Length: 465
Ligand code: ATP
Ligand code: ZN
Ligand code: MG
Ligand code: MG
Image (cartoon, rainbow, N blue to C red):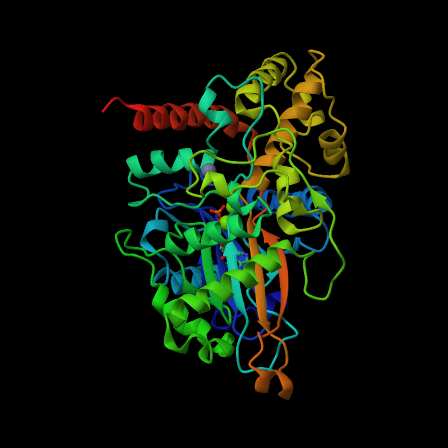
């Protein structure tokens, strides 16, 4: 990309999260991830361009040197930091403003930073040019934490039985964040059992919240509605998907054909999630089993008597197994981490310069990674143990907040397939995105939030009638 040739007319609004706005290139399969700032940010509190550049370099380093080795080369694209003309950023910020959802407008694009992150557009398949008239479909899932915590530091029994996502739903409903409870349970998605994964994905389609988005040819076609009262439009999604599953026209003679299409669509997502990352691989995968924690969440709608313990597990190289493995670096739970955070804080009060040696704000390099990997299992009372566990916790938090992108498109059709009305074949690719650092300073907030969520859950579900 040439800095002096950056033209805002080549880019359009693609999407956003809490931290960044993403714009995509009209012709190349590329996106720019641009950081956001609070809209009433005064010049006084604003970060300098230099601080923002440091921050964005940290994000890239962290993805490259920490998350990529942990999650696997093939799933992670760390991108490159690019300098951007301030004029381009100002024009871009005006252009995207009208496209942005209202619920995200408490923040605006940072137009003073002079930089952004350039990434491949993962909603597209770069080699899938014009061979087929049907553009790639991309399913983006934010799966959240896929296991029940198993730390002896936990003070509330329900944390052993009900997963964080399911508890958090009640709290979010009470606070007006969402209008309906989601029936999605991450433990079903991470189970590796096809039936449970099917149910999890179906529940995501029925109530996507911010856990599911679907793109076609790079355009968003399905997500939660800005108006929280509105139901997601499944019929519209089915219309979009119909051309990808032509064989279903011949089947079932018009008996709920929409259901058949959604069913096939969910199966495609499932097999991509259980694969080794792309459709060109084969071989019987080794399975990964969870031994330490209970495999089922009591709040999940999946019928308990249909769970066959021990007969499933995720293939070891599958994207969900990789994410789960990193999430499980959090083995003390926030209730075990908070006292260690305080130990570090106390130490820093006495030796403030040690903040650099302990790499609390980076740099996120091989040496940071060594601390994460070589952390002791037993607490010897040292600050080294404390910082190792705190680093591990932060890495796990990133994996609890990332998204999986599954992008697929029909394989080239041969005549035989057309005639036999066989199931269509797809080529697909799976990636992980949004691998930002979670701030060290956020730990006290996480500690308080955890107790609020758990206490609210206990009050709302166990209140006497
Ligand atoms: P969150 O609030 O989930 O932490 P965030 O602000 O950190 O989000 P991202 O999740 O990285 O930002 O990006 C926001 C959205 O932009 C994503 O949900 C995704 O739809 C889209 N996006 C981000 N990176 C890419 C990419 N490389 N290719 C295609 N789309 C992308
Ligand atoms: Zn659950
Ligand atoms: Mg995100
Ligand atoms: Mg993020």
